[in-house]
Length: 177
Figure 1 (cartoon, rainbow, N blue to C red):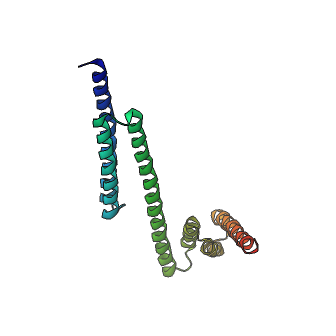
Figure 2: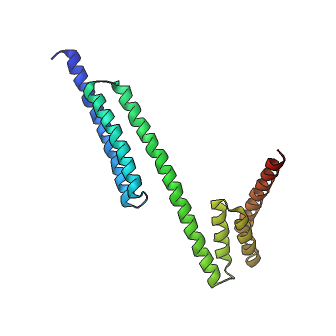
Figure 3: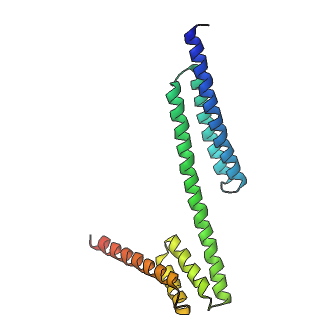
């Protein structure tokens, strides 16, 4: 075996030792996200199909000696970047679902006790986090009516009203613009 053949074999082994664990890590993330119910079975299956395609391309590249080391690294980085973006999208979706669940809980608390200032405060904060500005202003005004000493609610209400004014002015500009 010549030195160039030996170097080519070492390069293939090195690629495989980087590529295979990265693929396994991504597959494990998909599987665990499915087990945690953050991905549906269909979403996890679509991710596995895409991963399998990338894995086949990588194996073909390693075996054939094509693409080169930088090609394999580029493929791995693209897959990891896609994974990060995907995780962010699903994290945001889970976060929004959590906020919506909280709104229901606070509304139930208010229905049980209409004088519950804390429930109105939390409801206003949650609406503000979801971007439901008008609902946030309404809930925070009610919270301050029940507990006028709350500095936190006063700050949140000020912020919500600023956002509300900004939205109104943007709508006006769109109509006139």
